[in-house]
Amino acid sequence: MSRSDDRNDLSIGLVGARGYAGRELLRLIDGHSRLRLDHAASRSLAGTPIRDSVPAWPGDDVFIEATPAAIADRSADVLVLALPNGVSDQYLPLIDDDVVVVDLSADHRFDDAWVYGLPELHREDLPGATRIANPGCYATAAMLALAPLGATLETEPSAFGVSGYSGAGTDPSPKNDQTVLRDNVMPYQLTGHMHEREITHQLGRGVRFAPSVAAFERGLVVTVLAELSRPTDVDSLFERYESHYQDDRLIEVQNEAPLPRDVADRVGSVIGGFSVDPADHRRIGVAVALDNLLKGAASQAVQNINLSCGLEDLDGLVSGG
Ligand SMILES: NC(=O)c1ccc[n+]([C@@H]2O[C@H](COP(=O)([O-])OP(=O)(O)OC[C@H]3O[C@@H](n4cnc5c(N)ncnc54)[C@H](OP(=O)(O)O)[C@@H]3O)[C@@H](O)[C@H]2O)c1
Image 1 (tube, rainbow, N blue to C red):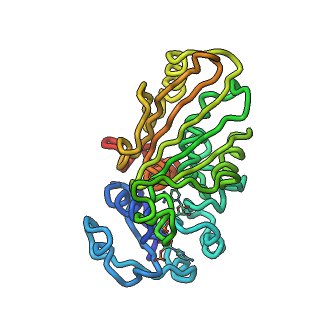
Image 2: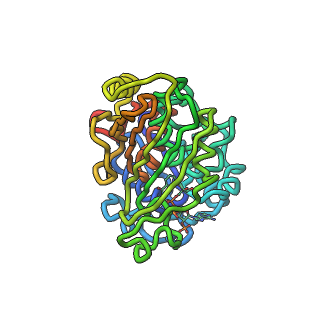
Image 3: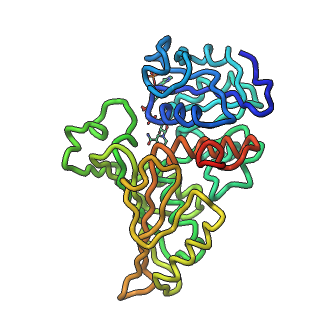
């Protein structure tokens, strides 16, 4: 298939289209006026109609084989890899340098040759970028909570995340087994989690992070506890976050603590629940909620594509872009 010849129409390929993130991407591509699907690849669904998996899919397209050779045979302006960690390097050597690649895995989040695609922190690096590492879902939430605190952090902050089970992907595991999770919350990997290293690497300072998974399907909340160098109060914290994110239309700041249920199916993130310890006004708490499959994965990828390709920031994500 040849590159798109319509300046207004970017062709896009997707590998890993069966997964949670891949299906969300198909839905977003369908609703995006400037993106046209060139190919969606899956090993297990190859040859089957996309509509069988994504009922609202408008055309007769079928999934193609997910092999490096099959993808190298195609030519699209943008390629999204929605694959498990450690697989992207099978594909990347066969992709032209000028194709915009967005990798949803952690494979390139520590690679300085790639742009780290968190628009609220790295917007200026995205225009023209052709290798974009999409951030992790918990890492996105934790960094949105920590960025406004910046140099006023006195000691190492802690972040505690609770995610819905879709965060564990579709490969069967106790972390996405609804029988195990029913009426339950499961803490896991309480030290050395990939997202702890990711947040620490990106912010350039130590952060503790501990995740849990719970019985709901999508959405997550991360609670950050921090000690600041100076006393503060709840109103000042609220104003600091509101001012920090005043130009970021996907970030909403509110007084109440945000809940995963309230952000499910939303492309943005909500920050709130500001708290200051009455016994020590330097000790604070803040909570961030987002949909792990959207702001934590697919809609963040689309925003990165928009910014990289010179489209409107929020094309295909909010009405009116
Ligand atoms: N789920 C989330 O909340 C979330 C959030 C942020 C980032 N991410 C990241 O996004 C990526 C995808 O996550 P997911 O939750 O969508 O995973 P998933 O539901 O488990 O889907 C994985 C996809 O990769 C394909 N696949 C697996 N192994 C493959 C291989 N060796 N070669 C080619 N295709 C392969 C699978 O389809 P076939 O088996 O049919 O080929 C499937 O389409 C992961 O790196 C994950 O860490 C996920």
